[in-house]
Length: 366
Image (cartoon, rainbow, N blue to C red):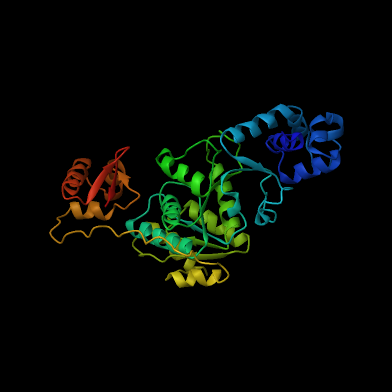
């Protein structure tokens, strides 16, 4: 095991030691190993290093870094530090570049032209259709699709890219080995096998409230263009769009009905200057230098059409469902209908073959 790499990881994960302090620390001590063994009195002389940070460094050990590297290796992953040639160049110029990256899957995808496709967890069928179409066509054109591995449109975008025979990078808000949300277990496995999972959090770390906004700056940094499909007010997708703008990158937004709460964010982005995405060619114009797939997979099939004879509330409930699925409780909240009425509608739709019930009690259109 590379002792210097293990020492760097131990330092990087010490509370209060951000990227700038870490670089100042290693420069003053000449190496990560030297920084780990530096006495407290010397650490206090390093500009920008507070007493609290110097005290925290006293608890950092080489064994901690070695354990983290071993955990990543047991999961089949690897660790990148900024000195590695494969460390993404786009991360070097953003605010708080990751001091260590943990990766699982195809590291060859780093540095390739990419598009970020992001949107709401609680999305509409329209949003799912658009996210699936945008991701599929981008992947078929040879563009890597980046998103955040969240429930909802993130998962739709990743799956569509893989279905097209293309590539996808999932940026996690937790450590490797933690599957969150649990509904994405199959997607997690597929991404590890055929795409790339990337995170700045150590293996086994659970997600927390602050981890997702941090993740979003990496999603936008990996992408030439960020496409926001649907976003309600306060959506994390808007945080990704803001990060992209701060990084000087292109943002495109999909317009939606002014009556839809999930389109408020995207419509406001367009009002404030983001380019509207109206057709795939407008996105692919940013990727003229990319070689399309030689034999892309066929586009995903459309849902079975709803029969004209379908009565309310079956029609209303069916229109809230898509390939990503939803639970009966979610449909109850989205529709505002009584829970018993929702269950009756789902049962009728199952009998008609328009909806199927999947593991975990989620229902999806077919």
